[in-house]
Length: 264
Image (tube, rainbow, N blue to C red):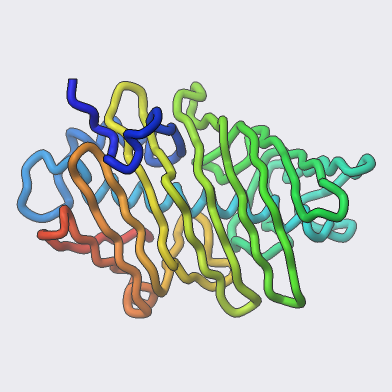
């Protein structure tokens, strides 16, 4: 059987990864094609929108935990924190807007992170942590450093499950750097996989977004998201215009073009 893994991943087992795209992934295969011209488009506009929104929600979760590893919030902040040595128990309850400012939406659930003293490194677990339509169970690790307002974060979400019956998997490496005015976001070889369906591999390159802009309705002002699935590909290209209008340009297989609207 011919492999559907992109050539860059065939040197090892295809990695599994990510969330939200998944629920919609199954029905989107038979949904009307939102992209131009090709019947049975393997990456529809609907699917690309779902992957995009899910990726930015997952990024918000990872970065909020990373920023907490760098600076524990004050009493009464979100999330509530209980510290025991180098272990932080984080309680978002039924929902609160994180004090970190990484998103303007509510996050709910629980998490725990363990700090590597003086190294800026951390490990952790997520227990139903997420947005209303994207709770995640799994682990993470990463590093965080700050110089004044400028912060640099690397966070790997891995061994994660998502879905009503924990049927979908999450594994992605995010990188973020920036200050109070703008964040730059990259991600490498994220993999979105529903049961018995072709994988969707995800990369983010130079995506720029304002603090608070991550979440279920993210509209970056620069950069690109690339999705590969089977032998198909799609590129979402972000511009200041797309951030202002909410309409994002998407190209399919480098030869067809259209638009999607991540925020309905």
